[in-house]
Length: 115
Image 1 (cartoon, rainbow, N blue to C red):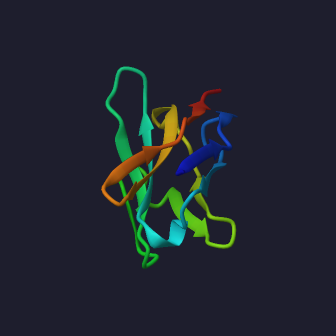
Image 2: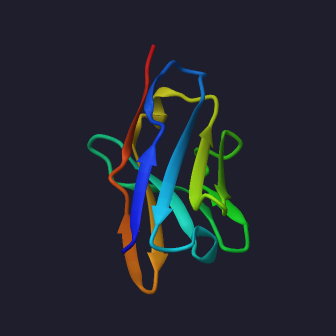
């Protein structure tokens, strides 16, 4: 059974950093594209970053140069390092995997950027 559990969210001041974690079970993270998405109040969920099985990555324009997606194959965990955060990064962050034609989501972790 596929399960994704996000953690690491919280309240941070503008310019600060957070690292989100997505612990996976039921599959191997290095075998499938893994991604982080976010949803701000009143807005649609949007793709933030993706890492492919090859290790290549891509990012939304709004986070390029500030966010880094990575994974630890031994721990089956995907990370999102977020630096220089601003108020527009406030959202619930979800990780996602598309495996064998099915999309699975975690429960999300709240990130609030505020002074």
